[in-house]
Length: 254
Length: 254
Image 1 (cartoon, rainbow over the protein chains, first blue to last red):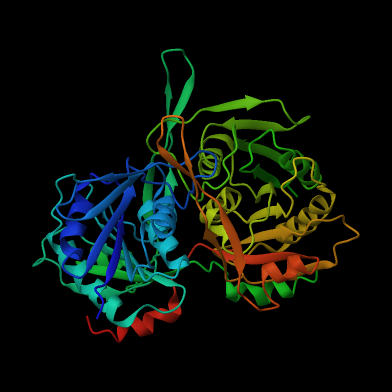
Image 2 (tube, rainbow over the protein chains, first blue to last red; image 1 turned 60 degrees about the horizontal axis):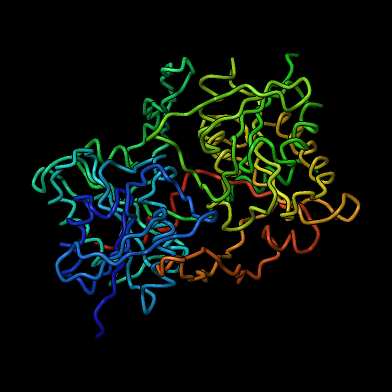
C-alpha cells in the first residue's frame, strides 16, 4: 500500500512547540508535509487573504520533513498546500497541537479549527487538536499519544461526509487522563469585558478581554469531558444550516 | 411600547454604500446605532483581535444616526458595541448590506456573516444580508425592501434559539425578484487556483484566486434560489456539532 500522505498545519506558527510534537507523532504514520503560518494566527477564525499576496518559503525546521512557512492565515496555508505544495490530495490533515483548548464556542474563533474545516471542505479527512494549557513549555506527551490513536482510526475508516474532528485534551499527563469521549459542542460563550485604557496622546483604546461562561449542564459536552479528565472528540461540520428552524420560518408567510 | 433598538454593522467598512442603504431601511423600524469597521474586512471569517488594542471613534456619516467606526474585525465591532456602546441588549442586529453574495460555503469566510453569528452568540436576533452584485454602485432597492420585511418578522417573532438568518439576494430590481425562499446552505465550494507571480526581486508570490463549483443538485438550496430569481433565507447556527456522526464515532472503540 502507498504510504499515507499527511498535511500538518497550526495557528500558533511553524516555530511553536505544539507543531513539533505533532510532527514527531504523525511521522510514524506516513509521509508528513508541513505548511504552517510564519507567525502566530490565534483568533483568526476562518479568515482568508484576498487583498495582498502570499509568500511561501521552504524551511528546515523538522529533521527529514518537507516544511514550508506561509505568510497567510491557517486557512490560506491549507489552500496553498493543496494547490501548490502537495502532489496529490493528502489522506489526512491534522492542525495543532494548539496551546489552549478550542472546545465549545471557541471552535468559531479558532485558527486551528479553521485549518481543519478548510481541509474538510477540500474533502480531506481532517482533525484539529488542542490542549487546555497555554504554557509554552506544556507537556504534549498525552496529546501525541491521542492524536496518533485518532489519526490511525481516521486513516482506517475515513470520516462521515462533510465532517471533521475537534479534539481537545485536558491538562495533565497520559496516566492522568481517563480516556476519550465522543461529545457535542457545549453551549458556552465568552462574556466580553473590554479593558478601556488611555494612550499617551490622551486617546481611548480597548483590549479585548472576557470571561468564559458555560451554562450547559449536559454531561455529553466537550467542556464536561475536559473538566472530568477525558479527551473530548466532537464531530464538527461546515454546513451551518439550522435544519430544525426551516419549518418554523416557513410558517412566517412572507 | 419601547422603540426597537437595532445594531447595524458590516464588513465592507462604514463608508460602503451597502450600510448606508441598510441605515435608510432600518431607521424606519426603530432606533438605529451603527458600529462598523473603519476599513474593508471581507474574507475575515470569524477573526477577533487579541494581539493589539482596538480604537472606536464616533463619526457623523448618517443623518441623525449615532455611529462609530472601529479599527477591528466585524466580530470585534459586535463585541465592542455590546460591551461599550449599547446601553441595553439590542432587539436586532443586521449586518450588511454586503456587496457580493454570502451563500453556500461563503458563510464560513464571510465577515458579514461573522458579525451576525457573533450577534446570535450574544443572544441578539441577528440577520446577515448580501446581494449578488460586487458593483460599488449596485442597486440596493430590492435589498432595502426585503431586509425591512424580514427584520419586521424577526422583531415580531424572534428567532429559534441559537439561530440567525443568512439572507442573499440575486442581482436585479425589486420587480425582477420572484419572492423569498427558506433554504439550506448549498454544498458548494471554491476550487483554488493560486496565481503564481515573480516580484521585482525575483521572489515568488501567490494571489488567492478560485473557481466556484456547485455540485449540489437540490432545489432547496440558497444557490438554487438565487439562480432562479428568489431571495434565499438560510437559518444558520453556531453549534457546529455533526450530531449524525456521533453514533458512527462511538462504534470506533477507542
